[in-house]
Image (cartoon, rainbow, N blue to C red):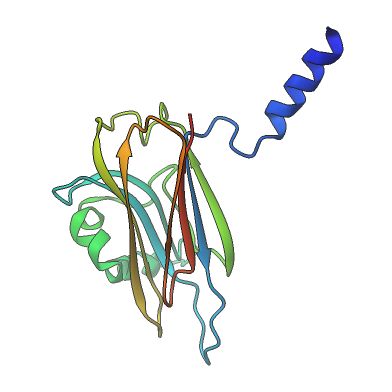
Length: 170
């Protein structure tokens, strides 16, 4: 009996989704361009009326001494119009530094501060990326909250965003 308990606890701790009810995987693709800058990225949950239900992540140049990175947040045009211009950054648990090329995973608990107030309704996960001397791209994944069954939904970008997935677990 003691062995079973130890193995069970080890399995729970090894699970990559431990404690997460919503997982977003976002790929920042490697681009073959002369001048590359990491993209600014905003990830949010949007209601059917396009209002923002939850800001999940905003990645920008937070290290700039004169806070000049904040002035470029307006380049995330959809996020900026819907939420950004009314927010004071940095936001604890939401904003952070830009990320390098690769796949990044974000996990959120349904009872956590960002998702606990979501009502049962149809939403869209929205990811917007904008890059200096580069392009801009927005991807959307519609989903129902809460879901009856665990689900993985996917989208694929064309330039600034690679693969995007939204996995909802129970």
